[in-house]
Amino acid sequence: MNNTVGHDESVELETKGWVKRWLIPLVMLLLVVVITAVLFVYRDDVSQLEEYGYLGAFLISLVANATIILPMPGQLLIFALGASFNPLLVGLASGFGGALGEMTGYVAGASGRGVLQNSRTYLNAVSWLKKWGVFVIFLFTATPLPVDLIGIAAGALRYPVWKFLLVCTLGKVILYTGMAYMGAWGWDTVVSQHWDTGTMWIVVAAGVSVLVLLGLALFFERWTWRRGR
Image (cartoon, rainbow, N blue to C red; front, top):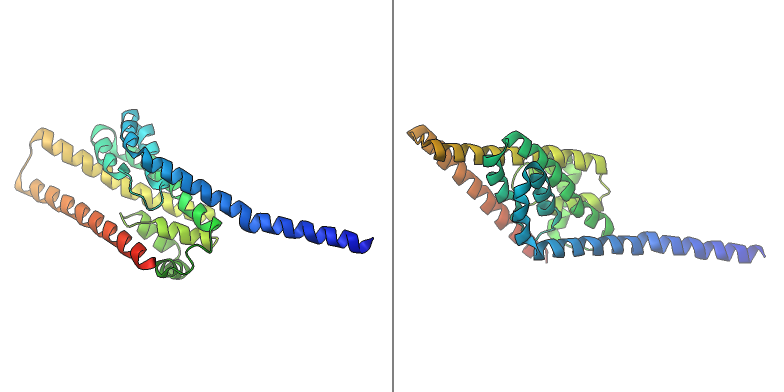
């Protein structure tokens, strides 16, 4: 009798272990993949959210950051929103939305620890995260650098969710507030036609800097993922 009970308990524990180790992570990963694919297919509809002001800024940023690896036009719309609304509020709304969107990468990492273990870029991200922690997360979220890989690594390492979300929020708010103010200042300059030499150089330098950062981010993202294949 005791042997039978012990066997039943063992089977139950094995079943629970299988569900926790494989079934739940696979379902979570599948959900993230489906969300990413749907958002990418309907990416052109994201621009319509711009009509909803601060709520639109929140939703645009949420959707843009919820896609893993696949590009979305969200960041470019932040410039336009900054020209039409209060740049600080646009930055705050976009920052909170972007931080929540980055949780898809975290969930993907937490649900598929074995997927990227042989990737060199994944191992680099893990090493950076172990060594520098919040500083790496802040650097990638406060700049146009691709943060998806860091989020995946954080999830796989079971990095504290609250800490990841907090640092992501801070970084995204800084990034999007800067973008919104650049959009506002650029538009005000065009409308007022105050094109003195100093303003011209500031606008040109800011524009070139943004383009260079975006270009480097795109190149870095493609290069690292190709190297990791």
